[in-house]
Length: 338
Image (cartoon, one colour):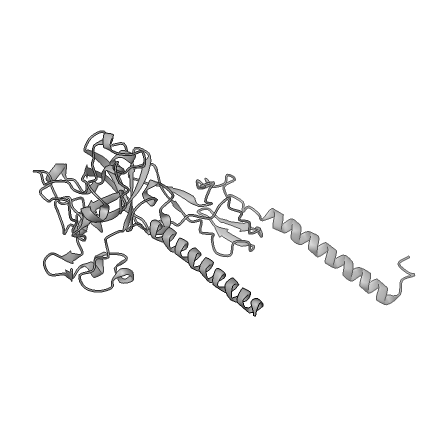
């Protein structure tokens, strides 16, 4: 058979056989070098994955519990063959498919750290001055008509509150989930923005409009206690201090010694949601961006509430679209009649 082949056929057969032999040798070599001699045979521990978001869950080294969900950051050139350095050698990798099928859209991820074990006290709109709270709360640091805009007295008596976390007798005109922190970015009596505000407030450059207009009012905060997380808006300044920016925006502990060193005031709605047994508790808190705020009773009420504003804007847009549609239909009918 071999002698029957022409010279060109013999060369083609030899060339083909050579290619097949080289290919088989390359495959064998690749399999043999998948793991370098002397390297570990056990895989590194996989990170904990949040099944609903596809993110890795980091553990707070201080609290010892999962603190926040972080986005998965794939290593460079994922899906491409190459080498992966390890402490004991180099592992050759093969091409991996790019697969990601989340069960629901990813959540936004916070950039702000938790402030842990903060003594937290309760205050309320309409509260009269006492020894531990020398400032009356019918107005706030940023709203001279706070009680009026809220719609009345935010009675802290649990028997006079609804299951929707607001006082009985009226629908609150502002969010009943409100807090106070001990820093004001507006200088008292001058209506000027404080000099340091530009450097210490993370969102200052994005929110600043003009001197004397706060960029803090309405900011969302997450609060955590005994496994529950609540959300509220920053609406007043306190307790006791108005200039403790090293605590509010830095790493310091609260400067005040009043009320056991309290660093956070919360409304009766937040007290009830987090199940305070008395007028104070120990709470972790952090700032959150508005897109991080999940559904909950803190989204239901208030002209100052971002989510109420969004619903009203959507309703207005729908009504406007309906009006324009009816106007167009009316014009078409008039044309047909003519």
